[in-house]
Structures are given as C-alpha cells and as structure tokens.
Image (tube, rainbow, N blue to C red):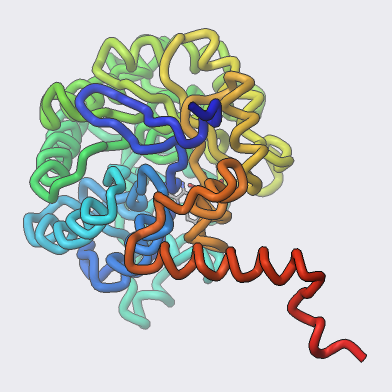
Length: 389
Ligand SMILES: Cc1cc2nc3c(=O)[nH]c(=O)nc-3n(C[C@H](O)[C@H](O)[C@H](O)COP(=O)(O)O)c2cc1C
C-alpha cells in the first residue's frame, strides 16, 4: 500500500472521486447563447483523458442576466442541458467525476471576455453585436469605477432568483453531472449578498450577518433539494475580502458551518473579488499554493471537507498540501491549461512506474516510451547525444 494521498479516492456522499486532483472551474467564454459546443467537449475532455479525478465545468449562469460575458455557459434553458450532456458522458467514459459550477455574476455581469480586459460592456460593444444588459445586486452600489450600478433586487426578485438556481441544478442533474459547485466567490451575486462591502440592505436580506447570509443559504438549500441526497454539493467561498470592512476568515468559518446545515459538503477556498476598483488592493499575495493559509484554518475550524486552489504546480507540493492537512482535494486551474495530462505526470512522479491510470489507447505507448528513455539513460545517452559535437 502506498501512502501517497493525492491518488487516494475521496468519497463524498454517494460519489467517490478516484483521486484528489481536480480541475478548477475556468470560464472559456466560448459558448453561444449559453450552449456548450465541441470546443467544451475537447477542452474539458482532455483533462479527463489526462487523469483528473474531478473536472468542474466553468461558471455556468443560472439566468441570462447572470452571465459575466456573452460567451458564458448557461443552464437556464433545456437546450443548454442537451448541449452539455455529451461532454458529461465523455468525462464519465474516461473515469472522471463530472462537476459544474453554477453561477450568477450579479453586479459584475455584462462584461467583455477576459482576454479583452474583462471590462464592462458599453454601447460601443453593442455595435459589434455584444450589447450590455442591466445587472442586479443586493444594493445599488457599483463594483468599481466604470461598472454599472446594479438594480437592487426586490424580495420577489430574490425569491425568483432562488428558483433559477433550483431549476439550473435540476438541469445539471439531467445533463448527468455528479457534482454541483455554487460560485459563492469573486464578488458575484452570492458573495455580493454575503459581503458587507456590497450588501447595504436593511431588510431580511441585509443588515446583520444572519440576514446577509440568507440568500446564499436559501440557494444552497434549494440546490440541495434539486440534486437529491446522493450528490456532493461544493461551495466556492472568497474566504477573505481583503479590505477594511470586508469579510474575514472567522466570518467565513461561521458561514461555512451554516452552509453545511443547508446541505453543502465541500468548501472550495478562494478569495477576493468583491470590488473591481484597482486602487483598492484586495488580493492575497500570489505565492505558491496561495490559498492554503486560508483552506487549512477553514478545514480546522469547520471539520468540513475542503478544497484548495491557487498556483499548485508540482506533484510533491500537491501531496504535501494533503499530508499537512491544508486540504482534502487540490484543484488546479492554469497548471491544467498548461498541462492537461498533469494528473498522469504527477502519478508517474509520486508512484514511479505506475501507468495504470492512463487511458488504454495511449498508456501502453507512453509506458514503452518511458522504458526506452530509461534504457538510453542507463547507457549514458540523452536526446542530444547524437547532435553534440
Ligand atoms: C482562464 C480562467 C478562467 C477562470 N474562470 C473561473 C470560473 O469560471 N469560476 C471560478 O470560480 N474561478 C475561475 N477562475 C479562477 C480559477 O478557478 C482558479 O481559482 C485560479 O486561477 C487560481 O488557480 P490556479 O493558480 O491553479 O490557476 C478562472 C481562472 C482562469 C485562469
């Protein structure tokens, strides 16, 4: 028996992740009317071929006005369910657990795609077929200079929005997803309600911490109902707002306990994003494994299953995170974009000679290549031996 934790299964409710390597949700802004295409099949499929135990599809809007950009995925319409189904089936055929991150962008919606700067859409964009749309939030406070002032949601709109999340979660189940994550971070709608920076209401949905957490807790409970008892529910938090008057880690720990009561199983630890004003520096320092100083204490304080994310780049680093108890599950974003086979490479590094997790179509060949290279190395050859003078 190996004591490598990264390749131990992780059971949560009725689902068992085959290992503790997950792909973090990453917007590709490449959907049409919220529908996935062959782009999403190939993009997400290569992580499953690459051995990730859990693949979480990007922020997927529960309502059209809840998109970040025109290119976001959505699950507000049955045609979107159908478009995602082949993606999920492919992930399953490769042995990965399929997750989707449900999201509502709130006051940070109606923006350009990230590689065009992610700025708010304007009438100029309308001329190129990408008109801005009115955004909503807990209070009529813009996320930053140049961003739209959101329409303050009425209690009726809040109730309708909870139903949007419920319906999207049902569609996620119909599409075949095993796991649902709620995007409660980065200043989007759930986070905007919970944070005192963006929620200045004085009704049942704002004022006290209890009232600020009400909408996210209602959403979590509705989604739990919609996905049934067997499927894991993850919640991505911004564990700290990183600014005066914002959420602190101890607030988040209490919030997580309440989320657990509402049916959440796993806390996915991120941070920041509550404002877009570049003059306010809210970012935690982007060192290696930059969210482990938050995920470890959250795991300790709540006893919940916790995921960490942020500049995890090396198999030994990922393994050390688990061994130290800073997380139960390691999510990778940009590292996976760089190397979709990261999980297989990590296995070869931590469990030398173990090619068993590769897909049969390619695993035997990759193993033969490794043996050939090992023989050549033993003979003192390297790839440049023939070409050196
Ligand atoms: C291209 C890209 C798109 C992203 N989209 C999302 C998203 O849809 N939802 C989300 O919660 N985080 C999103 N993020 C944040 C990542 O999930 C991740 O938390 C962050 O990149 C830090 O992890 P990394 O250092 O492994 O990339 C995105 C990041 C990138 C690079």
